[in-house]
Amino acid sequence: MWILLGITAWIAGWALNVWLAGRSASKITALMVPILFGLTLVLVWEALVRGFGISPVILPPPSAIAARAGESGMILWEDFVQTVIKGALSGYVMGCAAAIVTAIVVDRFDFLRRGLLPVGNFVAALPVIGIAPILVMWFGFDWQSKAAVVVVMVFFPMLVNTVEGLRDTSAMQRDLMRTYAAGYWTTLVKLRLPAAMPFIFNGLKLASTLALIGAIVAEFFGSPIKGMGFRISTSVGLLQLDLVWAEIVVAAIAGSAFYGGMALLERAVTFWHPSQRKGR
Image (cartoon, rainbow, N blue to C red; front, side, top):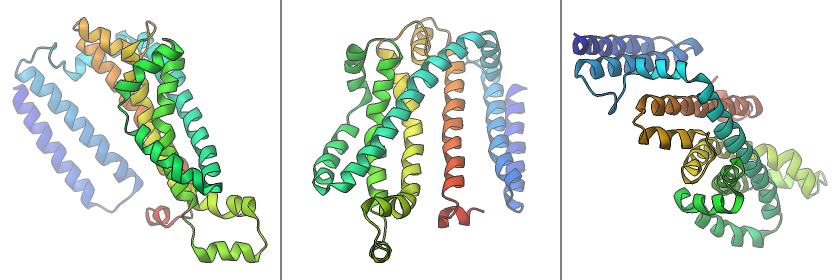
């Protein structure tokens, strides 16, 4: 019966999504399609787990995950504050702000661009599991070390995007500013920074996902008795897979909201860009 219910849910969800996708594009339709697809996956997951009698130690059903999330609301909130607010968000703000300031300095002095960007590409390729234990030893086991890991992860991708954005102006545009007797800083503020905004927001969106990943992974190498990474590692050892999945769901929602917020801010700031006008 459960397997039949899963197959029925999949067919019904597929047909409904095809019908919605064929209708005229609107904000409501664009929102409903992913929501219905997600609900279909949850229903199929629940039906298959129960239909095949899969052990909750291997894969708990969504209903068990939701029940555990309701029971452990305070734990999930404390872990969210420790990992997302203190670790990921603080490191994200510091890393991105430092990268933008450094990009302006690098753009002003060409020898820094030639010397620093190759080093940045090297550091960006370092695995987080390699640098996290070192930074935990340097900054301690609290959120400061997780913020340091996030800074390292987001700094160079943000730097590269900002530097490329600052160079994304045509010779005609720069010549026009010179005819107005505009100096370097005037040209930077009125021409080059606005032109770089699509690149900057691309870096901000990329860094928003890296920040959360970095903060969670860093907690595997040392953390106080709270945090998403800490809770996931200890709950796996205790075979509390429903709590592990509850933490994963919270992290996914936080990451999606973080990315979506950056995308909405990008639309508000870069409304003039052709890519944004096309989507309207």
